[in-house]
Length: 356
Image 1 (spheres, rainbow, N blue to C red):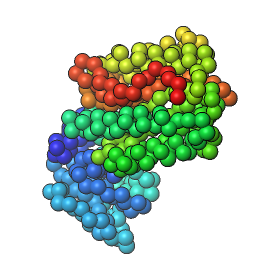
Image 2: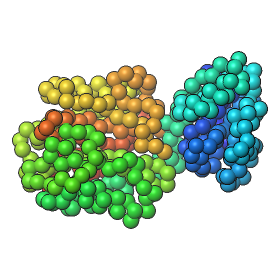
Image 3: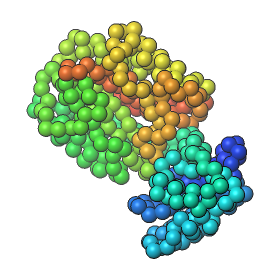
Image 4: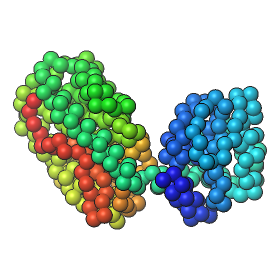
């Protein structure tokens, strides 16, 4: 599996006219090699050359399994960039990860000033974006847990419960399900707080008539889930229910058109146009979705400026919303897995508004 991924990376580099790359994102290194390290401030990298050369640049502090990849060791007192510079081709252009710290990149540029450095993160990101069958099943499993926990939290939503208590309840259920943790900090928003798409839970108690936005996700076997549902406490004011229906319909319209070859911007347009037709276009304030996998937000989004085409195996969110400042907000979100001729919706909790 890892050799296949490394081979695909070499092919991607070749297509860009490059022969070498330094991969520095620890998750991408794990994805390509199976080696899992959190390096902190220390230099850590995978060097890949299209001639078949592959090297892990490692601090002696770390312990790694035998992967068959050449290991280049260094200590805290070594000239780490000097060691790395001696392991690469000084006569060829170099691909670099987008998030490699400037303290490393600038030092390497000084060592090899004639080399042209290119952001080639897309070479790795493109491979990670199309999930293989094993990854797809892990994402289904993480979403099944998310469905179960969302259903479990609904009876917990009673007048007087706080946003923080609800978020803690969700975290506890994830732990009981064997999750490694959260995909992202859980969002629980009552009433006017729901007008803030990224509201952090606080001690606000739930009151009758409040809307309730819960945006949550877990990490299971390394892969993330993500889902949002909006409920109402006690009763749903008529205009709130109408807006919820509008947002849900936007979600469903976008999902209905997902298949390989469709452009991300056109998916965003389908949802956005429906909300605009309902009169709430200015209140849909974010992109329609984001890619997801090893990280909750991965490269590639569902937005009006992304003209890339959807490919089989991609997983991304579809999450339209309407946010009325000082009043309330609604968001409805699923994850979708792109199939050969359509998409599989990974979340199965009813999307229609309900009263709790």
